[in-house]
Length: 450
Image (cartoon, rainbow, N blue to C red; front, side):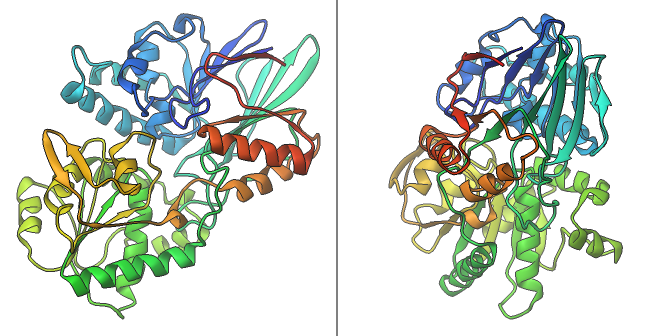
């Protein structure tokens, strides 16, 4: 069996792993690159022939995990994409939005079109959590809840070759419990080889309660300064979690209610999809939903439905909060607010999502004062804060805790993926020292025989 890595190697985006047996070839994820040089990297040919790939295992619907699947079909893939039930709906929305973005932003011909997305979606096959499913006579899979976003999955894969069966476990993106919507990540009992993400492998997240306290403080400061609080958010999961966090704060009634705007058509559609899959929520969120209460609504909260909504919000002179995409500030409607409000000292920008290297969001987070947003030069006078408590990725300790549950058998090797160099190296060092397991941090194109 050979494993080859074609993305998320010593970086966070572009997840794509090729597994080859004597009879079968399959991918685990096929995502877009979002770091520097991403346009070129997303356009070039895959490091393999898509026609030769038999199927794809898709861990979840974030675009850095599913974003090149239409390209895969376009270039010859004819197999099936196995994922959870919510992921089918969510991936469809994310990929259609991606195709629209390509049509607007890309130089030359877009990487793929909406028609390519529609073709790709015909190959999606939902699989329930917790039940073994035979792909063929030699390969079985089982999905467990990764607790990262709605529908996210850990894949257990059993592969039989020459009468010997080996178990591979792909963590996907592990969640950061406790979270307000999704369930905690499932633990896995035994594996021969594990492939684990390391987005925050060198970090310890702020406790969620401390993050909530800090969020409330930022809101109070916005009220006191009569300013704008801008939160760049990912359309999928971060938006829904932040709506619930704001709902909790304002419905307690101990601070003044101020206008809150969600200005993201994609996030609005995703939020409606969430409501279809309440059975996948954690126990607390399901209990609220059973009381027929809308988890994603509170007084003074508005979602833009037409351009006039945005204009009315911009004209409002008092304190206000806006959530908009994109989460890394690389495009989307958040740029309108950043251009208008970053030069104002009463403005606050609150970073609640991962920011890739070289992204505008990363530059804002790291305190750069002179930015170029589109064709406009912007001087930053706003106050910038970040809260990692709301991350949907496990930190280093929670990843170690998850890995330590895999005991029967103990993994022979652990492959560290989906993390920048420093983060991947730190968690690899800890796993080796604390568990005595060999760790490999693959480079792009790296091949390993198991």
